[in-house]
Length: 139
Length: 402
Ligand SMILES: Cc1ncc(COP(=O)(O)O)c(C=O)c1O
Image 1 (cartoon, rainbow over the protein chains, first blue to last red):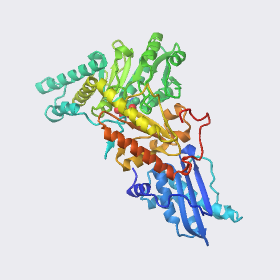
Image 2 (image 1 turned 120 degrees about the vertical axis):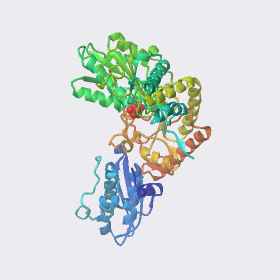
Image 3 (image 1 turned 30 degrees about the vertical axis):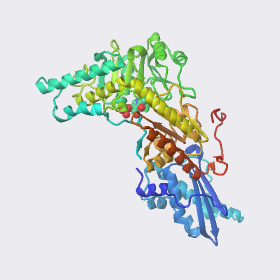
Image 4 (image 1 turned 135 degrees about the vertical axis):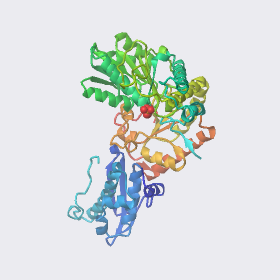
């Protein structure tokens, strides 16, 4: 049901853990629905210098978090904002249809962290990031 | 190490079943309805299988109908009883923790004009005879309560519930798919009208089961055709399947007391080991429990990732989390026993059998402990420093044992 890539990222998740000097933190999902992703970034000169995640969720939730961190690490904020859930899923050689929402969550987690980055500087993130994706509903 | 601990999902074919089936897969291909020698042999074997199953259940051979499995038996029992008792009424009583083979059939009958009462269960998954008595109405056609639950292993007081139901004049069905071959099941002692079982849950082949229909209870045919199974379930018989089911059941029943004692002792060891994991909770009843069932919830982790993590180290297990079922909600059983969604997502079920060695039991405890810790290290709901959840999700209060 899961691709080899998904299993690889689940078994050996990249960039998992805490990032004490993060200046951009986003948390999306809802424990009631069974998945929460917390994305932590250190952004320097608009470049994502470091990124870590913590995820409560199924295998696909862990794998999409891990892949999303790999895809944005070292990229500019603008590049990271262009990351779509489809791109995350494709990088994992696809996800089962019922697990596509995990890739949506990964995209939202990235956007949520970047929103926080702007908020901390007193900049309204909505015109740049769009909805700040603090949706409290289940996917 | 490879440890198969998902025996409630299915079991490997027992040696006895395999040996009994071989002749009918290889040499004896006869249609049990034909008249020549090879067919008579098949008919004899089928008859013998029916006798063996009847003996194992305390039934008469003519009360045993072979079917295509547990799901089919449940469908037949519910739809058949609803039709047979239509003149009496269209009210059906069942429980919130039934297998989907019963629940979805009841929902279907609900759409066909039946009225369904779903009884709630207590925090251990038990239904009481009093609850059933209170739910009975003059137009109640059928009560269906499972003998043992497939997720949490709770064993229901079926003898008392059947007595209450039949005293009232309604039919009583029990889904005994998880119980047969694992605990003593005697239809006469239980006093049930209808009982479902499935071969692959006790070492028989998949795709074959049986429905016990008490003599005197008339169900309409499930399948119309050539008149097989006393005209109620037509179709050329699955001789090898029936013979395999009977051989597996005969063996399971012969060794039942020793197997139960052995498996329950190993289960106690696993439960003891896993209870040492902080913020873990045993689900189901600690005493009225299937010998092989070990079901837990672990706070701050998600069940499907536990199952995948265990798979990486060779352990087969299952979970009732939403992600495992491919739906938005965790299992209806875990919600019915009152677990909050957030906690129910962290469920893990291990179901052991006599095939699991002592070394495997040690390995299970060790690996589950490791995998829960690994998932927690990754979880934003877990504080690694304090080794406790960052948030608790018990609106009705944290259970005493946690
Ligand atoms: C309690 C219960 N009822 C019914 C079934 C359905 O049996 P089968 O899959 O053999 O049709 C199962 C098996 O999953 C079960 O555990």
